[in-house]
Structure formats: structure tokens, C-alpha cells
Amino acid sequence: MNENGVTVHYWASARSAAGVAAEQVPASTLAALIEEISRRHRDRDRFDDVISTCSILVGETPVGARDHAEVTLHTGDTVEFLPPFAGG
Image 1 (cartoon, rainbow, N blue to C red):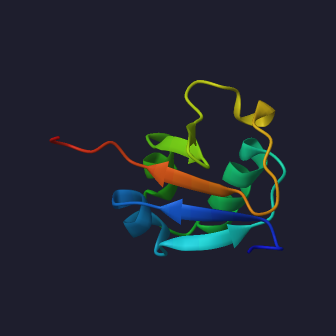
Image 2: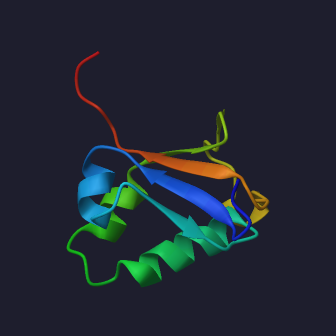
């Protein structure tokens, strides 16, 4: 579907902080992706703070505590940023 990189989805407060629900980002690692979205949204209040608290999924797989530089991304992958949610 996406020939230009990775599809990034932002949920809840991450969506509000980014000002968009989704975007396409060329990146070969999660670390590179985070660096690029931080650059893109550097003028948005709280973006980096909100993103730093998010759980991250690559496809359906949680990243957890893995080193972001070690998480390889491929064209067409989906990365989701999920902020902490209250309730259950």
C-alpha cells in the first residue's frame, strides 16, 4: 500500500500533540522514525513529551524496552503510538 516508507498512527493525546492522525515517514529504524517525527513536529507544544510516554507497536508487535535503533522498519510497515490510557 505505501511505497514511500512507514505509516505512523497517533492515538488519543499523541494525535492531539501531532495535529494529525497519521502520516507517512521514510525510516529504516524506529530510532530514525522518532527522530524524523520529532523534527516534523518540533513546533508543536508537548509533542516530544507525549511521544516519550507512548507504548509503540510495529505492526501488532509491542516494541517494549528494545533499543529503538535495533528495531528495523520496512516500507509498508505500520507504527502506532499509544499514550497511557486511564480506566479499563
